[in-house]
Length: 190
Image (tube, rainbow, N blue to C red; front, side, top):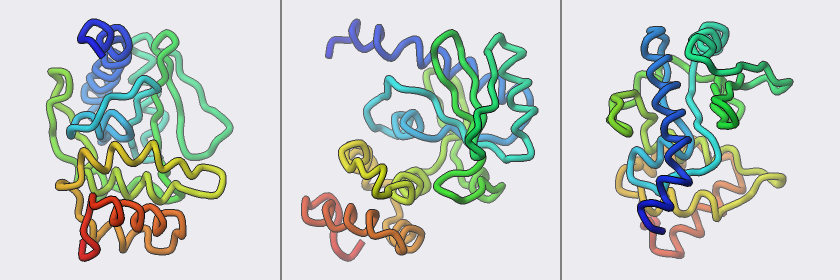
């Protein structure tokens, strides 16, 4: 893809990411970039879908106010694990429960400060990103193809022992781990 085509596809969403992160930083709320753009910040391909941040559930209303203050439209969807904001037609998810587990201060404290599109912000660790992705796999959402490029790009940044421990109960995550072992992405010892 040419640089021009990449900017046309991803540029508006990256601008939304920067606006949202700046607003959350200004509010002094603890947060971290999550999802595909956190993987992008760590070296994976960019996303054209949405921007995800993780926050504490107790901060959901304050986070919505912060995004509303910069002109985003906020909504409280029926799902009980996130709230959302729209920057025109670009979606920002504010997730406070990921893969069935509440976002904790400890999780946010493990995030690293990373410069993303010239804005310094906390970004989830590669290990936490992959653990969430694998824990979310189920019989209704079992798209290994979405996780594979992220794992390939971030494999050396991931604590595979911790990932195995955190997703050990999931047969879908176990199948994915076997797949990436067989593909030679990770060793069976990792």
